[in-house]
Structure formats: structure tokens, C-alpha cells
Length: 218
Length: 212
Image (cartoon, each protein chain N blue to C red):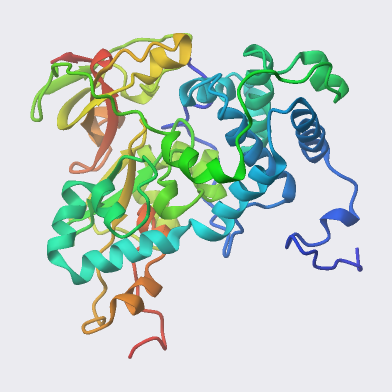
């Protein structure tokens, strides 16, 4: 979706301010929001791409005003209701109308193994690559209303395949319909001038990770 | 607010103040999910403890220091980041990691313009600035401006490569080893490798007074 989360190239957001000796969490609620989101994901009612899409659907004015873990909290509440783990009325009242009768909750002994597993996106499927390193490609000019990992700034731009990373779950379809649609993932190099025009430094570049379904031969 | 005191969870004075909007919502949500049997509060504690005390940029610093002293390891690290990182005991955590090397002629900078993708297993959870609009918007269109603002202007004859983490594949920058560290032990080297250098917004320097 052409959401406000797709920020690459926007102006006016202000200076980058690095906080010295920053704590991992700035308050207890941030830590709990983080842990709740990870632990709720253990029930496998959603995948990481659905998680991303849940946060992207935060209304843009709120998204920009929210802190990072407020976005996580918004996404978690959305997913809990959409995927039937909790009713909207339960979230409003704070009281359970029924106990969850499905999968067991993540326990302490399962934490390390779960963290090792939750991001796995590489697939063993034998899918031929459409492109090889050195190929000239053009990123598709597409504007799906759902989740996509093709940032707006790269759409319609010409690049060079730098690396073929192998076969991965296609995040765009996995977010919308749990369709892994196995295909190759590439690192694609775009010259800064191709993306930002003739004033950009000549030798600089941006590498974007894109799938077969994002690319055409150029 | 003169009576701030340190609580055992390390968050100063948090319980002295009324809970804010999100704090209230999270508290209510946790008690609901516990009541429903969807989460176990002890597992939440364990998750938080993992990222507060076990996983963090010290892991990445050890990877970098090892690559600096062992050229054969460095080759393996650049060829297959996840496997080489797992060799050092940082479980790999299922994360695909690609290591990119800074050289005198190439500076690398990692960003996630769409969200907050970051190599948790070697750097821990990302800092606020990495997830914030200023960095996400500017890193791809004006990396030299961002680097200059952060105190590290890049000469014109040095190429800048920005890596936008748009997939479940994470980047770690292998910074240049600074001059003046010849003969240092791996442990000493690991101490000077910073999180920001492994994201690419800073270079590793030898702090004054830390020479052997």
C-alpha cells in the first residue's frame, strides 16, 4: 500500500538524533508490548508479513505521531481480533468472555527455540531464478493496495542484479493470503542518479532486496 | 517529581506516576491475554530478559573483532554471514545475515525504509533513531548528509552504498579496523566496535586513553 510507512526519500522529517546510552526499552510498557507481540505470534495465527501489514494500516496521522511500540500495540490488537484470538469487546472491557482453547501459550523453555525460528523465510523449493547477477532489470511500476516490499522510490527504476539470495517466501502474497509463492530474492543495485536524478553523487547507489515478482528484464 | 527512586526493574520512578495511555492499554491487554491463556507472563519476562541482557551489539562486536584478526574467518563471514556468525555461538537465530565490508573506497549504510528490519541476533533490538522517520526517509536519498550530520563526512572519492533491508535478510556492516590497533587482542578490539559502526553511520575509532 502507498502508505506513510513507505518513507524512503521523503523530506521534512527532521534531523537524525542518536540517543547516547539508549536503553533497550524506554519504559516497562514498551518491553511488555514487545514481549506480548512476540509471544502472541507463537500461536501461528499470523506470519511476520501479516504483522508488518497490521502496523502499516495504522491511520497515517496516528502512525507519524506514534512511538514505535505504540505501532506494535496497534498492530497486535488488530491481529488478535482479525485472527479470532480475542474479541473486540474483550479488548474494550479488559475481561475474557472465554478461555482460549487452542494451541498452548509460549512457555519459558520454548523462548530460545521460538526466537530462532520465527524469522525463517528461506524455502527449500526448487524454483529457477528469472535473473542472474549482472542482469539489467526494471522494478515494476505497481501500486498494490495490500502489503508490498517494493518501496515507491524504486518503482519504474532500472537496476542491476547484484546477488541472487536464493528462494524465499514472497512477503507481498504471504501478508495478504498466506501464499508463500516461493521465488528468488535478489539484491538489486540502483544508481543514486537513477533514483534521485542528476544531482545525486555519481558513484553512490542503493541496494534493494526484491523478488522475481517485483522485476522485469530491462 | 523530587522523589524519583530506582525500582528493581531499573525504570526510574515509573510506578510513581499515573500510567499513560499506552501503558494502561498494554497492562489491560496483558491481563486479558493471560486470563485467556494466550500468553504466559513468565515467558514475557524471559523474552524481555533475552533482549535486555543476552542479545545486543556486544555479539556483533565479537564477530567484527574476530574477522579483523582472522582473515580466513573474514572470508567465510563475507561469503556466508549466518553460518560464520553461528560458529561463534550466536545461535544464528534463523536469521539470514549478509555482512558487507567497508573499505577505504566504499562506505556502507544500512536502513529499513519500510519498517525496522535489523539483525537482532548480533545487534539486539534497534535503537529509536533507526526506526524513526528522519533516518528512514533520509538514508536513501541523502546518505552523505546524514553521515555528515552525525559527524562523519564522506570524501567525494569514496563511494556510498545504502542497503535497504526490504526482506527477511539482514545486513551487518564490517567496519574498517582503525589504525593504531596493531597487536591488540580480539577482546580489546571488540571493546571499541560500536553498534553505530555496524549499522554504518559511524566508523570505529580508538578512544583517547585506550591505547595499549
